[in-house]
Image (cartoon, rainbow over all chains, first blue to last red; front, side, top):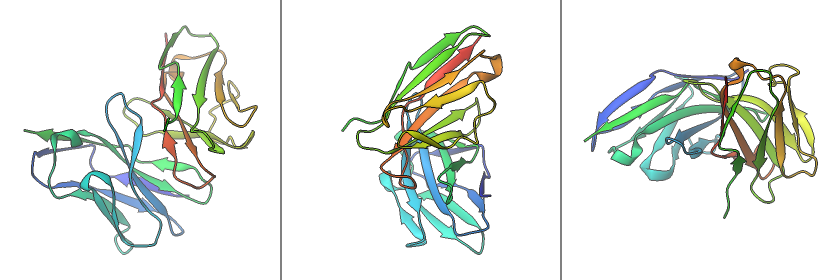
Length: 112
Length: 113
């Protein structure tokens, strides 16, 4: 079975500085991996997805993630944080059984 | 276009009562999924439908939980004899077909007193 582990429950950055949200995955087969964002009182929104076509995946709002098989990682990055990026971020695994497996989430705080 | 909608947005009930939570998927989406998100946790899979049939209900915690999708569009999640531990946000998602990107609704926040 696939599982994902988000290494930080809370990340705090200053506006304009880089963002790094870490995720490791565990899978016995080639995974599908996603990052979703959840703003307060809003639905989950897909940021980006990896499906083996390319290891560097670009998403919306300037986010990107790199799939590293040797490290079993799929970290989310953004060069420069904006106040509107403050939200909860979920690393998510998908498999052939169509169920999504969510990490516990990382709360991103952006300080002015 | 319209996204996934869920009603009610909030539901407060008493222990032992019956509740129904409704999900309207994106028009034309054949696959529909239910997840439950407890406080401080990521969503957990409950059940998914392809068309009218429940293709996988292995995530339903016990037989008090049941979901239907009689016409292959709207789905209702039904919880009998609610318990305080059922308090959570119930999320619905839909996708064009099984395995395609899942789009989530805003959720129904259920509080069992």
